[in-house]
Image (cartoon, rainbow, N blue to C red; front, side, top):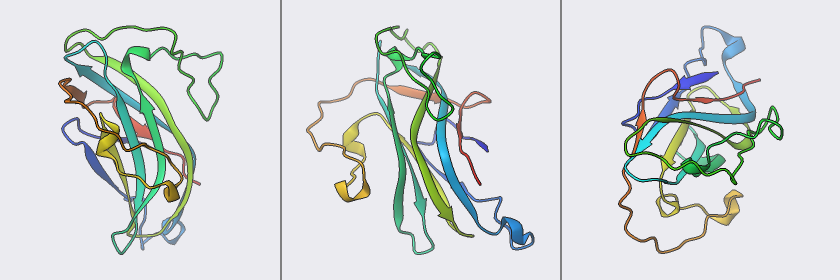
Length: 171
């Protein structure tokens, strides 16, 4: 399943439109496997940083972290010889500086995830440009250090369209 999202939203709730009481076979589903992100991106600096997370919001409104990803746009070259069906390998030794407000396509993988989704639950996909914007405890299975972050003058922009999406696998 591919989900498109508009660029002006940093947090997007992905409603489970495939869950329907009219079709009992689609009543519940399982998210399983790789998660890939593709973004059309621009910014006002030569490099930036993106961190993403995907979580499940249950019926009580509780958030359950499922997957995380991070990416440095200046190191966006995909290493197809080391990529697999579960992960896009990025060649971080090739540095291609961004140009002021010029759009580039970014593709990267998030950690594979598995989760049983019930009718009425939703997925929440979030994008940030600094690690301090996501507070995550170690008990959630991911480590993001708490650190003081200097002022961030870079202005990132996601561009809506057919090349901006998150790709999820459902069973």
